[in-house]
Image 1 (tube, rainbow, N blue to C red):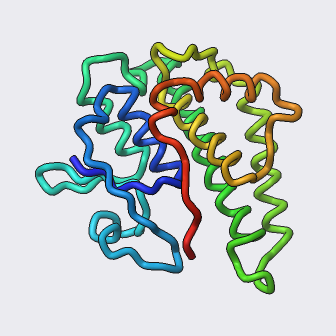
Image 2: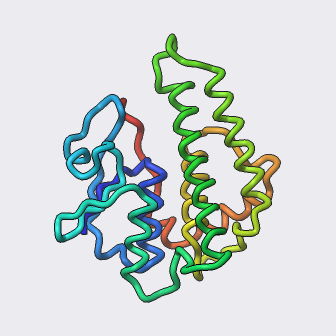
Length: 210
């Protein structure tokens, strides 16, 4: 399997961290691709009509996207604890935390457009502030969410925890909407999660190319 990747994408990293947690990383050929709404990458568009990574190319030619679909697919290929619980309250708690984390990353990307990526004359400060408001509310939600758990540097995790760790680490990497002040549980949780081998094996790096 080939994973079209980007070393500074929170969503691509989520898929790869999940693969490491499942013990499947060695089965992936990871290929970095730069993508941006302003710069077409034909190789990525060939696998995803939205032109975004991650994209998982299966051996039979099937292309899977986005990160949630890829993680769901990979979660059926291993014999260990599932990142997506099979049913009951635990399943929906994990999926809900994933949804919050995905929204954090999306809001952070939107903030960057309105504060640094878009030409200055075209930026809309009110939109940036609205997205920052979403991030502040999401931080408070995650701080209090029982699904956050208390992960050790090893042991089973959920897709929600993986999504949250990769979103928060990306927000820090980009310097968007700091969350540590006022959210001590969330900050301590991320520091513990960052010690996991899956996170250490997938460091964020690189700059956006628009």
